[in-house]
Length: 308
Ligand code: 13P
Ligand code: SF4
Image (cartoon, rainbow, N blue to C red):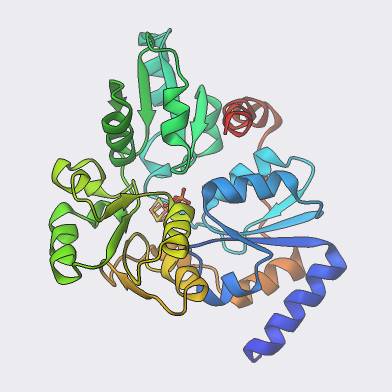
């Protein structure tokens, strides 16, 4: 089938079944093009809660579809391919958090949204890269904080808020490869460019990088906003390569340069247009969360959504 036919069939089925397609900025461009909403983790969580659709087709990785299922328990949430994982979500288990809580009963567990529903169910409050600073700043000053599972995001939050935070040794296998040396080299190569870096990057809490006046650290939607609103004409983007697709579309007159073309999340690329069509046809693969876990996982997500 040619792409146009696939797209037409997707649109048709979407209408018939009252389905909404949500895609992360790191999804394949052709998948982003057929989505009703494109966003970062926070924006997509909000959309999952607001949509009036009966079916949500989530084009991202598994933890994102799980989060949508927790937020919207009355909807059927589908992920078009099974087994799209995330190195961060896989770096921590609920048993490990239960053990930490036993040793630190008064401690607060701040859980990055890139985690399983089981892990969220053992956490006190969730955050995404778009609101991690505000969430941590809102916590009582006398409480011990454990930030899981992204060590780089946690270290950046620690640097920006001045709060002492216990960090979990997890990382994103893509952003972990974006180093201070790369940022410095790109800055020398493009002295007129703003360099926009995701806080999951290894370099996000590097002091030399933090002191560079042309470097800004944001979630994916923040990077897009900065590139769109800034009068500058050149931007180096330090995040997953596909984020450049929407930045380029919204800013055709600006030069958008990847920090490295190799920053690709293979898990985010598993979903092709054909998979979206098949997902709608067969209503597969449904993501369900046991009621007891869902109720517990909803609490830290709800606290986050109410706060920011
Ligand atoms: P955001 O969507 O919060 O920018 O996070 C990036 C990411 O790596 C998602 O998996
Ligand atoms: Fe996980 Fe990193 Fe891929 Fe995001 S980019 S899904 S954090 S591995």
